[in-house]
Length: 146
Image (cartoon, rainbow, N blue to C red):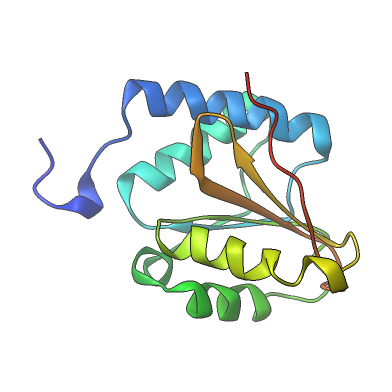
């Protein structure tokens, strides 16, 4: 048993779900240019399993302590601080921040273009995956439910 929340392992179900999410993400686009991943053990495992499911190398992951405790605003700032030349970006973090960020961006949907995609995976509706292109706007697209 993990001594802290940060050290908690991803469950067997979570690992299988991450691989399923990766397989789905691979069908909607290419490997992200960058992944901002929380330093928690379970999120690092999630990203590795997403990459395994998608057939991605996962080499462009930045594991950041800041993602672990970040609120939605801090996550948005981390995203905004990335290189503008990035074509796509994934954030693997925690609730309630990820859901708050997604729902906040969803409020902007009517004004947005298709440059930023947020998708929920069928295995955990509260876990959100961000894919950012050119930072011109956003489009929310949920994963198919099985």
